[in-house]
Length: 428
RNA sequence: GGAGGGAUGGCUGAGCGGUUGAAAGCACCGGUCUUGAAAACCGGCGUAGGUUAAUAGCCUACCCAGGGUUCGAAUCCCUGUCCCUCCGCCA
Image 1 (cartoon, rainbow, N blue to C red):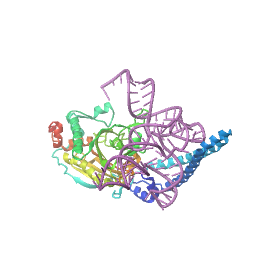
Image 2: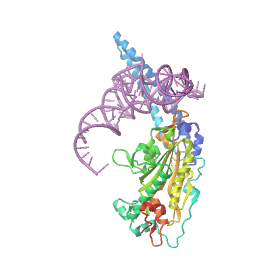
Image 3: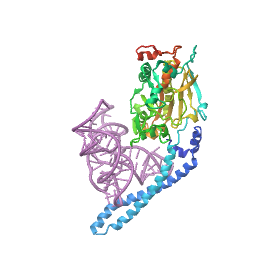
Image 4: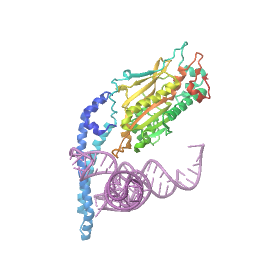
């Protein structure tokens, strides 16, 4: 959520910034509701003050009246009238406040100044490229063919068990998948100073509101049908970021850096017919996620570091990639700036997204009330939150399969993964 | 699943219908004292919103959350959430 005070005081500036994201801020509506709210608030508060003062005076008055044997009913009458007036004023205020909240909760984060303008992914800007796509002297297979050939990647069985957009992995492919997870977690915990964390894969709606998936994007989620208001996580970002919901951290604790492996569940409603082949877009996939909580002045540089941590995984795996900065129109609801990392897929002859690293500034922190105590002021202030995939495991697996395939359909295991595979060097 | 007991400020913990935004202790900050520190003593010390030039005052809300009773609720009632103890079941 944006700071309501900031929106109120600089509506034109906010509106201009949000336009980059393709969002039209209804200044008229905000001004109107804001002015109305202020009037109603003042009215409600002064009525309440009157009511409180009267109630306070009543303690003594009733005692005295009783001592004299007087009827106390007349004394209560005025109190009753004040109560009714105050409740009425509260109701009027609540109605306006709710409208204002509903509106503000659905306003996206303001993009950084450096974010390029643009409507869609066409307008994203490449910032760097690493590695040279390999040239093959044979016809490349995609991961589906490669998996079928060794019999260890099976989409048909998954369809039988559950439905479309699921997969079954067996044997060395399942092991390679697991090796990738171990490798990623070890790299981030041992080399980049992240603490490994394991969290629930089912979360409540408050957590989803905190990170910004709710209220706007409920259709992307799997919701449990019992009456407990729970959802499967679409990303570990949700439980891990909410670790510090309603918390006040000490300045000495910062930065907090978590690395989390988890499955992710996405309904993929609205992506029918898109990436239907293979494991690019699945309802269930696994991911190693990095999450950081930092001092507000550090988040800009932290995003660069965090993106670098994700890139290093691809470098160690020797997979060619490029990094792009998302344009305003492609930027997510909660993000102020996002870098996507795209890995080279020989079967598609193009780069495909394998990681997304974002700075949310105080947007999520405000929704979650995740704060730190500033020693300079002694006051709690909002943190900045960031996260990034490092990496999406399923997509990394298929990138390894395709980039490391041999003419006979076997797959060479990248050097850094061999220790995690019992020094095995090839699959199939 | 059954039977009980809880939830109060950064922490511990009183209060159980009216001068309680909340005793007391700890922690923290400022001061006195001291060569320095500790101890002792004095003072301060929640968050959010409104008003305001103001981080000054004043006002409002908040004692798990949401409803209710009452002129008046941290205190009484209802619902929910979470925690604890015992029994049962269970990976």
